[in-house]
Image (cartoon, rainbow, N blue to C red; front, side, top):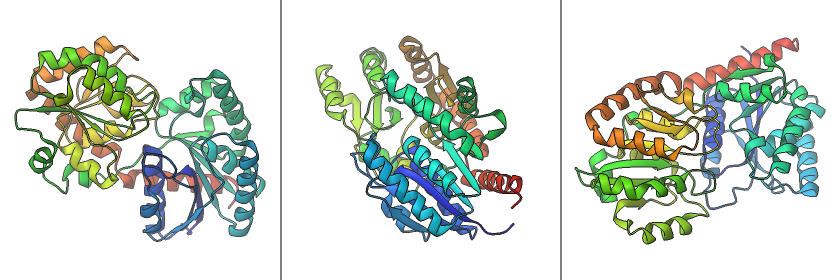
Length: 390
């Protein structure tokens, strides 16, 4: 296979699942000898930045200051023009876009710059991201407009394909599932031992840590856990909630915890470097991810790799991250009472919980290793180029 000139485009490199997926793709393709360039906007926000990592691994990184997550029409036009100009100069074989804003602007620019292979990954459905229906309707219209410009639409879970096709976005033959890759070794063998990390967090041997890995932000489900906490904490004296992440709602959550007098039951790590996620997962006993919107939550795969049973709402692609009642539990969407019962079941029978976690680790190793993702993307790129006679 000939080496390719590949451009990835993502809106911003904050600490998040889509961003980690994109960096692992760039790194893996660079190692294979492809000429890789990454376009991104500034990593603005309290979620942290992955820019240092992007700049440290040998491929090209270009920051476009006009790129922003918010809808800013004049600035967005400027961003589109800048993309188109640079693509004319680079003349890539493949443009691979990620996230909603970059996915729209990048695909239009690539199509009009006559890039042979235009690929887009759906990490989460753009047209379900807002609580305002007019915004979601606008994104549905934009996705329908840009779908014909796209050689392949990669989904991190099969559910993304089904939901998009149900809204008449693209054609079935455009869609392919490539599960999001992860650096699995550090989760199986974390760099800092479990007992050391737990001691640092104030967890004793008898404590059972129920972990959540997510931004402290809207739609991530932390409020649901706070609603359940008084009942679960009363029933299980050794229960501790371990929340990994930071965000704009941290103050509100901390106020609720104080009001409920549960300060000794919650550990909030704040923003941590991505390299610490494996060791923090290793300190957990159960992972719960009650988010209300996902592609396929990386936290579920991360928890499983660390040997934890996982509990999540049955939304989007989450059911593809576990085996029901074998490696974890799917909860009917937003049913907090069933969520409470499933957590209580795991907390009440830790030997069974640990057995589920071990089965989950084997499942996740087979599905979510980075090498499988890189191989899948290689097939996608060459298939599109072959269809173009290249």
